[in-house]
Length: 336
Length: 137
Image 1: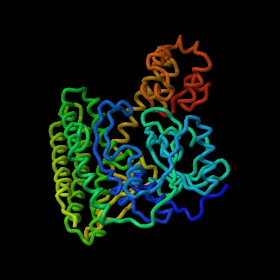
Image 2: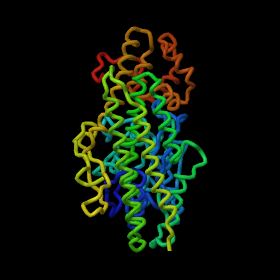
Image 3: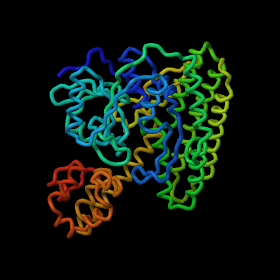
Image 4: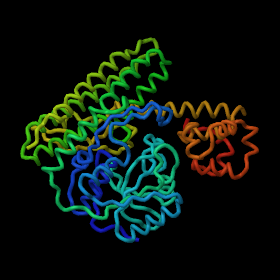
């Protein structure tokens, strides 16, 4: 079998936004990863104590899986086809047929079962996105956005990765675009998606998402002082991992969004307020990284040294306040 | 973050891979830059890996003593826990817990063993035994 013509792998910060940036660019609409991220209003925070990943609560710094694909469809009017399968063999056959027809195909998969991931990075995380752009013999040609170069994956391994069961199970999800517009009305769309995202972060109906979610996490961190120190260390390490490693991380997403705000500001005729919000969002990302540093310094503390959880919680509240200020500023902008 | 502050710590957990970071240049313009990792992230990753190895090591000791079935070890060795294994096999947790008992595990029908070997991604033969030495632990 062949490989899709003119397809070029690119290295991105995040899997889902990378896949969508590459996919629409491949279809003739060049769109940066940051623009994809912003247009799908994908910046989020969620702390979900009852949804466990490896025994630890889910902490997300972006909208839920598939949120970017769906958000972009909605804001740009891209037509996408999405398939899930109950029968794995059928799912592989459909993939082959789509490749034959010349599509580049997005797929959801589990990180643990993809052999090209370094062993230390292989965790049971099921919502990883990648592009399949060809097949050679028994190997699929994979454009995994978080890798510098394109990869190969044997059919059986890919099948396993696509059809693993569990939290956020991919169910063999594949997707491809049917129609991509060749022009975007930025003047109309950008204000809408920016306000939508700011609203989602500030005015959340549930106390575990948005700014209120950061507050909830801060409360849990304060509560660690009454917990077993080993468990407390694991929890702190888990926050940092969810923030810095799994996918792109909390700070990383803030920087992507800051980059989007800068790009948006320029597209809207040098909008100074957006440029300023971009700077502030950068500062928020830096604060998230300071928090990660503080958390790991706390983990390092020796057994007889006291871990200062309230200092960590306070740092989180600072981040929350700084983030809330940026969203308020974005809501206050009068776009002309 | 500014470009010259993007960490380049060559961390072990990346295994020579790089990650993209968004960072600003001197005039404040964003662009992407490849990072070889941040030691803070490495520490958090290694902590999680160590914890998984600790669980596998303890499970190995229990299985070697005959207090738990090999399944108990293989679950942790594949970086799973009861929750993940239950979801991956579609079996109830209480059933899996029973299968951690060596006497129950020995009598499991082929069908159930295949479900485990499929979910764990190891051959049936490997599933029913403990490895000789545990090189990874």
